[in-house]
Image (cartoon, rainbow, N blue to C red; front, top):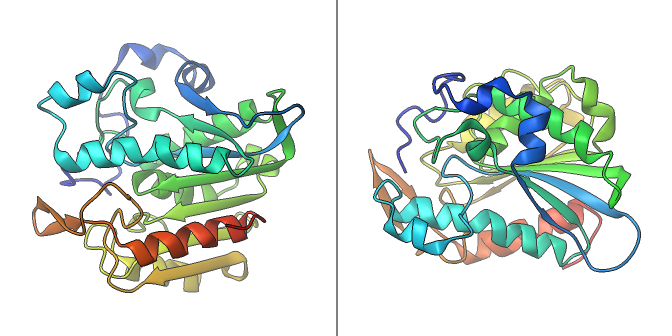
Amino acid sequence: MRYILIFAALSGLVPTAASSQSIESRVVDNHYTYIPSGEGTFPTLIAIPGCSGISSEDPAFENSNPNLQEDDLLFRRHYRKMAIKLRDKGFAVYLIDVHKAEGVLTACGGEIGSEKLADYISAATGWVAEQPNVDDREIHLIGWSMGGRGVLEWLHGPRESAENLKSAIAVYPGCEEATDLTIQIPILMLLGGADDIAEPGRCEDLARSASAKDKIILKVYPGARHGFDIEDAPPLVEIGGGMTVGYQRSAAEASWSEILLFLGRSD
């Protein structure tokens, strides 16, 4: 994972064939759905991945691609697994493949900026609300790392699609770009106390100063690194530049319980 410019606002750096499509068309063409069994509509999560992207349905592609490092693979596989866990708790999950939509394998060099992510989130909230298996009264947003950064950018409204969302969750997001959180919906921020990629102090400052600070629940897990909830990861992976990722069981379990509690479910 190459985080050289991960939190720089560099949207539009990579021209792609998809650029002629509307953002909503790209959402429709580039997403994965995880729907609980049964009839009717379901509470729904729109999920935005981190900069490593989402795993391919062809494992051989990932395992043979020299541009994907160990930590990339861990993160890419994590988002599908989280979507399945959430589905098994009764949520419909729409996992938005922003990377494929933008024509990039990974975006850890800043290839997808915060405003672009917010555009995708706006398009997704409007489109997902119209889907027949979605309870449009209970749509939530969740993003990890770069995806969490996009969530924070989106929360710095106003957004026409804000009325479709009930709450938002940002898991180890980058807060360097965020200047305020103005949309008045409940927000859960889950941070690693030892995160040296998305430093928690910036997010704590943002939560204290935000216009919507009374809506924010902030949890910091001592000693937890970036990617603390990736069960397949070892406790420490050094990715260069003095940056690390790693699984911490206590933080993973506590953060999962917080997510379910926030969404009105039990573990």
